[in-house]
Length: 291
Image (cartoon, rainbow, N blue to C red; front, top):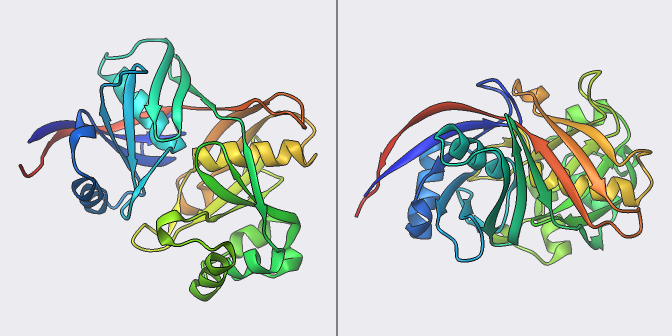
């Protein structure tokens, strides 16, 4: 089966920044094992596979090297940027079907805004358990980490300073203890999303990292779904004074990315989160999938 693809760097307006995603047009019909094999072949964190939808303008399936996930932010930006690049989408509103429901978006030139779901606040996790995942100490963490989802769950963890963020390194034993505490497995991971309340640059308000376990690459350059969950947490906890801010990620990897974020609604009744960014198409071509 021959399908067209676009390789897009998301949350950046230049190639080789932000987070890459290969968008396989018409690939939603492929079986899961083929999709996961394709992700492993690219060495990317995630790839998307599109198709028609009965309830939205299109359907997007999201795959890691190890599993399908219901929603992801940077692949959504990448997919819409690829469709616009090909002339299949124009400016204006667009909806897409995901495993987390129908997501609304807005395309305005190179800027793509995702209207993520209202955050769902889950379990709080003791600071010492989360800290061990990153080889850190409980004292490095502000407040209590919490599982939050705007379509995909992460453990939002605010660190005291950029130095702690920089020295975080995945500890497999700590990760195993964290998963055991949550009663989860590698097929339903809720990784800690490490955040500080200052940007990597003067333009940023927050900086973040996401460390990943094999078979994924060691770190995600920019995580749009976690950024939405993080925004909801920071606003609800009173850790930011404005619901609108600039989030930065990927700078320590040499792949700087930026998102414009806005939490919708009051702190105690958040209705959604807007996460906006751009996408730079790096390459296009064909994939010859086995029949």
